[in-house]
Length: 351
Image (cartoon, rainbow, N blue to C red; front, side):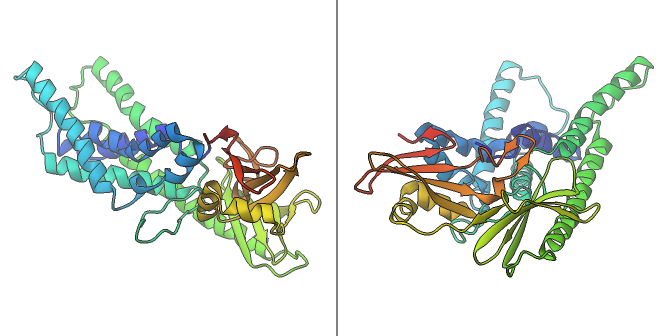
């Protein structure tokens, strides 16, 4: 299921944040911040309950401001247990920085916030104020996996040891803490890259909005492509249909096909109405910004299949075949009595 920011990026973000200076203030800062930076995605363990269950609970309370202090306490508890085990094995063992549990808790909160921030940048979104505010928020300016960000973080982590190895060969004394400059440079580079993409996304929306679609435009949404900040897939909504298009902000062009890029808003049938009230339907419509709910098939026995798709993911990009097999799609199968007999998410059956 394409619904999480790539986990290695989260882990590396925690490690780079620590190297930016936090590791000098408290022992185990790098370990705690690396663990905390990925901790919210433990909600994917809901997958053992089935695809609809994990879809409902992913980016749930572990991705909220209310849940962060609990997660930080758990992370610090794990590190404390590791510390006790380490001291028991070797009481004389010391740490490069002092052991400060309260600081470690605060640093873990910062790493947890980095997870929410990274998840907000893509177009899946999250609900940070849940349960007080159930609204989904999504920046939608960075692809689910961004090689530029990945490369900046990787360089920040591997460059200091490599240069340290060179320095040791020429007799330079090894520093207790190293890599702070590289870490800060990587973080600044990521923020600058985000700013660039935000500007280009707004430009793409304005370019798409200025086109003539033969109907009044009610809403425009832009989804990012990997690496290239000038290429955007847009959804233009009118009262009767959705128009998909690809915008290039470098030369201000809009590429679209009237035959394959127009999706008329489907009528509500008895089957789609029942499907929308199903478990999958309610969860899907709560999350989706551009739902396309269609009765796609009726068998000879009278069984109806209702498909749930989100137009935000119906475009072709790296790791994303949106037109042929859009990710984050669901199906509800109804029998002749219009009762739900099966639910699927991304081809996985909910038992």
